[in-house]
Image (cartoon, rainbow over the protein chains, first blue to last red):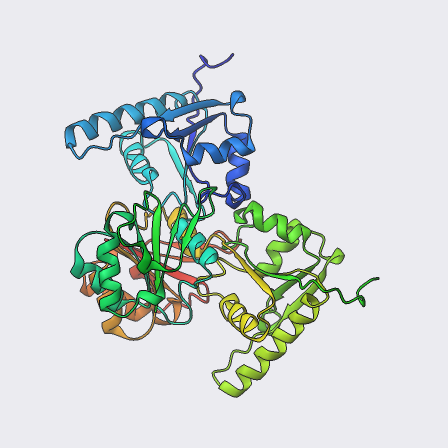
Length: 242
Length: 242
């Protein structure tokens, strides 16, 4: 064990997109980095729920031969708690980096699109500017949904928007009116409102919903009107293409 | 050679996203299908320019052991020529499928986002509904650019739009005003207009431009104002994040 030898070289922090759920949708590059990096950091889920990203990693490598670092991310909006917990997370990761070991933080989908890695990158670069941070793109659930649903996101001069669904009815209407296609992420909690808006705009037949796309629990819904009152759960998105 | 035996089974047409340029950004799934599929179709470029998608395939497999089918896509807006040329292309691909062989059509980026595969899928399904068509997502130049530039596309409740750049100045302004981040594809031909609009909205420092992202000829520009009058060429996009 040479862990205690502090080298002058600082490790690289990789943000690795491992794709939407199907392990085969990892890139060859992300696979290589997972294989070659001694330390794998992953988001530990609340309530014992297993991390998607970790499950994907486990299909490719023997994790008992790696330093596996489960990170907990604060789910609060309290600024003080957030800052304290995040600083602890960065300190944990930096402990490995400062001994010259690279750390691969694995993240579902793409690391630069609604990912925890965005904040980790920002904070690491601010607290430890000497650390090299590299993001490796992954297949996002948005691109994967288009393929699974058989719905093109955009063609020719079409404009597409990615919109986190909220209960701001006017904003949801506006997004649908002003774009050729819209992907509403996190749609489960406002599905009834979204169905109302789709009917108002005569777009209900143009919508489809997918849950945990390409994963083992994938569900595809093309009769969106029938979803009223449904509990669709996390990782559900809606594609609307005019 | 058993090519002349017509089987009852019809082959599957795959639309395979092979990523933005770096061969390592292909998915494991796309790699497996390229390896196992007897017929590889690829877009043949005009004027002897080699297809990106073909170059990526060639880094992974021995193409002399495959049936390689170069397809030419009409670049005209003349409806009659378009229809005739497209029908020929579909007929070429169907010749292989009807003998029970799978065909993998490889495409840069993601097959459901501004890709030739969108039209191929639509037309194949319309002319030969018995053909199974499967799209395999790929890393788009949009996701890859975010990683290479170190610019997150969206976080939290932010809204992001993908907009083909045109000389419609008001539409370009509106896109910037109404979204938290915008990716302008095909930006080269209107770069001066885009720079003007960015200055007007005081967003010039928030923009970055990338050409042939992750490819061997990749160019990254963070001083966008200096690009006025430049001939940036095809496959150039701009990311603006407020």
